[in-house]
Image 1: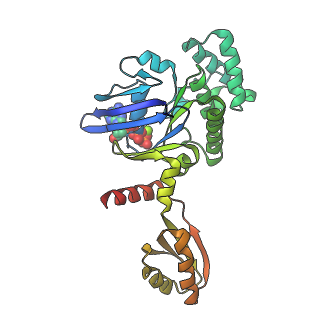
Image 2 (image 1 turned 45 degrees about the vertical axis):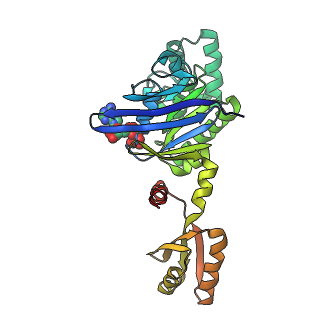
Image 3 (image 1 turned 30 degrees about the vertical axis):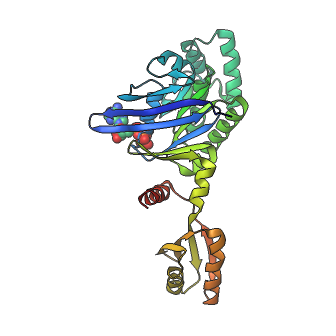
Length: 316
Ligand SMILES: Nc1ncnc2c1ncn2[C@@H]1O[C@H](COP(=O)(O)OP(=O)(O)OP(=O)(O)O)[C@@H](O)[C@H]1O
Ligand SMILES: [Mg+2]
């Protein structure tokens, strides 16, 4: 079966004077999937998203959203996309209530009045904001405000949602809640999500597809499960020992499946190739040398580790 791509980007370029913010980017996002564009500050995520929602014009290249070309049919593109910009909650009117904000934006989007009423109620209930409907948006917590901004993006029933760092200003609990709601939306209504993030753990939890962008260029892209498998072939572990850390270090350094051995306070940081087969070998060697192991724990990979690994792999 051929996949129907809801977002297609072909060699998109956007320059700001001498900065090439988006440099020959090509991507495809299958309909109904959650796609994560992952990258550090200044990588070009927001610029890519602004090009897709027709707020910016590319210098060259093309893109289409839900079958509509961003240059030829910008009005159609806007009709079928819902956008949560960076600092999305700042686009709400603080003195209007949650309900009034949505009512106002529904009018802007030309949603017929009766339909708007029903949709606003459904969305506020879906996002657990119905009880807050008469509170001024400016008095909502950051998490509630972000969920209200999501309601706003969904008002005109778009088939594609473009979300720029939807959880970056939220505490871990509020962020988790937003992620759960995105997953619930995707499951219930099957929209396509294009999500910018600089949080590797977040996109791994949320997205079916991931692309990594840095300095305007896509470093790699693919299905999350494939990417994870590829990354799991080599992993960083923390080995905590009761004493004799120097002996443990020289044992680790003598093993050909261990790289980058370093000491961090009472622990050794080890990059282990194929840990599923090799960790038991390491543990056996350490026990034979009478080293008291307190723990051998997997480190959560950070975005930085991932870049380093991808860049190293490319150099090889
Ligand atoms: N309107 C603009 N004028 C000039 N330069 C810009 C403009 N918008 C973005 N840039 C530059 O383009 C590059 C990419 O910026 P962009 O905002 O797309 O990055 P980002 O990945 O969204 O970063 P962040 O994680 O900080 O939001 C940066 O070097 C930025 O300074
Ligand atoms: Mg940004």
